[in-house]
Length: 429
Image (cartoon, rainbow, N blue to C red; front, side, top):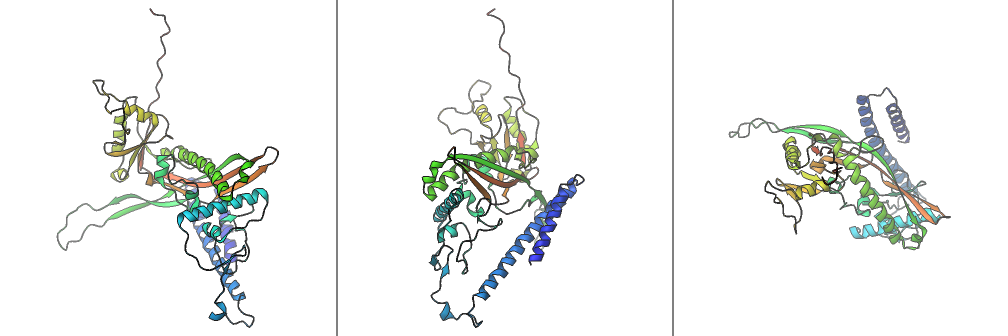
């Protein structure tokens, strides 16, 4: 198995080397990305198989001296031993609030251990909250490898299964980011989506008459990989907090920065230079609309989308555009919408509408955010460093996330640039 793992890693390295070659065209690049995704899956499967084999060897080594397995009587009374020396039996699963509380406490301990160079000592519930496996042979703590959750030589991994909950990102400031809903599939960059579907040419059928076949055309969406470091500085006084408070303080800052970063990138990321591809890049684009004709531009955008793309769609408008619509007047000079004591424009032509603060002035997006794929490809890692002279702690969070919108599922509208009128340069007459 270890030889197989070595061969897979060598194949992956060869694919990465070929990607960097100037002669690699777009078609070959796509083939290589698909091959790397397959290899990554095989590597993870092989690692799991190796871990299972090693576990079996440990169980065999735990047999009695005469080589016979332990009897039920010998097993009775024995409990699972945790690395910190605490023995526990089987306990009930933690509730979600308890899981998050213990995960925060564990994260605080891990960061503190890196900053102060102290030995880490997690409780059984903290270890369980982080998703680290508990085995009968786990008598002491071992730092996980790069592919596992926990502390490694470089930094502290935040487990994928609690990342969004720890950052409290279930309700981000960006409505579009909130509606997207990120996934956490390690290394996955290619996802299938329905490009088009056909139910046949006819609908009604006589009894016993064969119905038309439903045909679905699937296509693959290759995500653009984003590589984002976020560095934040805080004072050393936070070390006086408890582990849970310490983690909450760090995560509040980190959650805010991740929100701001991804809120912008899912809209305008270029898809190049280690950035994800924002929804505006591959969207259907109409002609820039003139000031005062936003409603007609939105109508054109809705008509430009297919019926499938309009299903579950929302209209995301910039703050400036929402104000233009709210203060729009009819031909008699009366406001179309009441501007006092109202809840703003919540729908246009029955389509739900939200203000997206991240959109540039005059911009709007129409589409179902579920047709945008955002995937965290590796656990988020935190590197902490103390600057003693300035009494400042600098910690950097490293995010690797991939994102892209399915083709022809969104419409992007923007207002044409206008030249402001020059003020009267003359006097009063």
